[in-house]
Image (cartoon, rainbow, N blue to C red):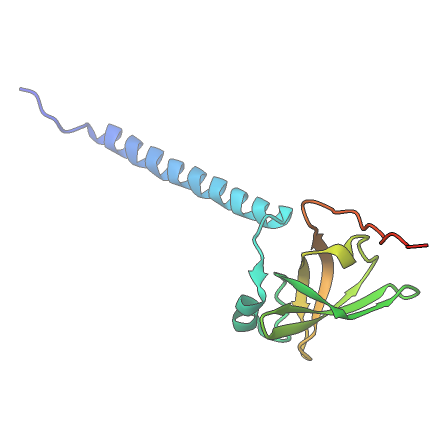
Length: 146
């Protein structure tokens, strides 16, 4: 007479193996997610997304991508203070950054700022990344007619 049921000790062993496997899987998933957060591989928000999801003064660190309005740029080279607005359509957000201005800031297509939105609605960036054109065109001075 054969039965398809496993002996009690085998069923208990399979249950322990399943629970152990789930524990290991959860630990690996946690390490992957925390590693991505620590390495900065989290994506950035557009300005319109940030407007709806980020609250002033909440202290949450986010990344925002936008176009720097070059007409709003104020640079204090002595204090290393940079202020400008990022724009998307008709929406704009003032940004304050303390640090060295990237060399290619004025040639940037867009910027990614990482930081927090303070209570006054100014984005305090702790890092500033610039995205430059993939192809630089040299500026050619017009020929003078003499």
